[in-house]
Length: 326
Ligand SMILES: NC(=O)c1ccc[n+]([C@@H]2O[C@H](COP(=O)([O-])OP(=O)(O)OC[C@H]3O[C@@H](n4cnc5c(N)ncnc54)[C@H](OP(=O)(O)O)[C@@H]3O)[C@@H](O)[C@H]2O)c1
Image (cartoon, rainbow, N blue to C red; front, side):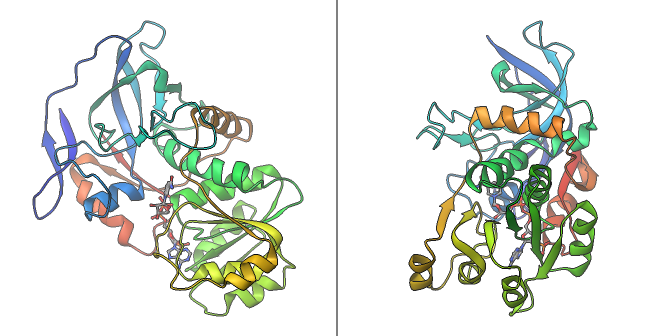
């Protein structure tokens, strides 16, 4: 079968021929039709991810039809929970935790085998491509926004980097919760696009003084951030006293300094968030169905265009999730 693996070639992403997986016990064999990329796939391509094992099939997200496995699953169109061994503690993943697609073979292939307990039926309002874009980004956005960010009706929330795949879903969950949602973005056009989703306003982070306009809102209850870097000190200027700054990524790196005085005086809470528990995955799917949330698909590529698909991460006009069709 065809699969996108990580190699030691000068271009580490290669579409290769490998053996089709064989299932045992409670496993299912899924014929994938659409798979979505995540930043971690690109970090792995760039050698910036811990514990890279060459030869692994990349990809944490996919949608397809169950071809072999327990009879109750056969023929169903499914998505896959990308958690591997979250464990029993809802607060934090177990020490055995990993994400599908490194070191376990992932979804960027014609077929994948996973235990049946990782499967969920595709939400019926989504196309295969939209559904493939949901699992990892949806779980991350749901925990960061609704759970850790405590975003709900009447709250004012800022989601940073509006064009990002996870941010798009954080925006959608926050709007569905009834909160007043604001964003940052490096693009005025992206701010206009999310306003059509129901976002109240936006700030261009390329303007060094963007936080001054944000201060006029009167304080944010929560900030949901994946950019990291020096913006953290701006977030401390615009957060309400005792508000929550939830950080699930560090696209722009670490802050060079931290205004510790402002941090303790504001009683702000800086919280880390990664993925989410299996129960939160189920809750996230319930929200998606109840509020008819649709992940934003940026572009769809065929498997033999995988290099262009990965390169799309570097293009400033990307907006939402990049999908590869097998
Ligand atoms: N901890 C976890 O479980 C977890 C899960 C998923 C992702 N992540 C991490 O979260 C980050 C985002 O992931 P993603 O899949 O959403 O990536 P993505 O689709 O590539 O989005 C990245 C976004 O970052 C925004 N950005 C760039 N510079 C920024 C800045 N200075 N301030 C604010 N935003 C900025 C851009 O927003 P605009 O286009 O609007 O300018 C861009 O669209 C990555 O670092 C990823 O590794 C972590």
